[in-house]
Image (cartoon, rainbow, N blue to C red; front, side, top):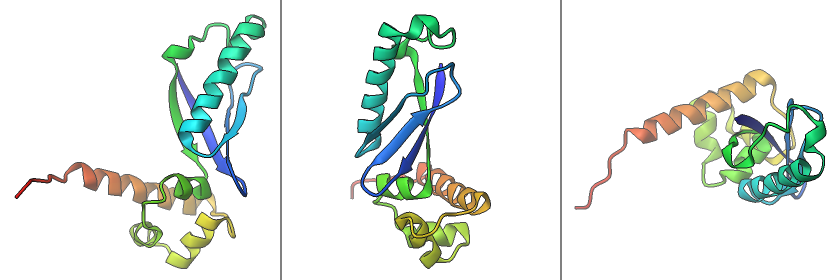
Length: 137
């Protein structure tokens, strides 16, 4: 079963939640995507063990078979993938680098259209990297 994990950044931590499955909406915090995922799995296991039988959507779930798909807000994305240069992503997206830095720091929040431009730029960069070959001289 594939579930979407929504990750947002507040001042100090990443917040994560899973929506749209039954009555239970697991929500947690962490310092990284891995920590958030570990916490979500613990929450789901605890819910299934203690309350899941009453929730038709969740009582069919096997935690080991869950496939997690992550959706980040821009600030959380640039924190988690801090090795990416914001100016390069801005250039690929056709956006002002200063504006992208403001999105990444949480000073401003992108519109859905701006967020989509950033997402497309990141996907294009990933596609470009897939074609790279590295050899030892």
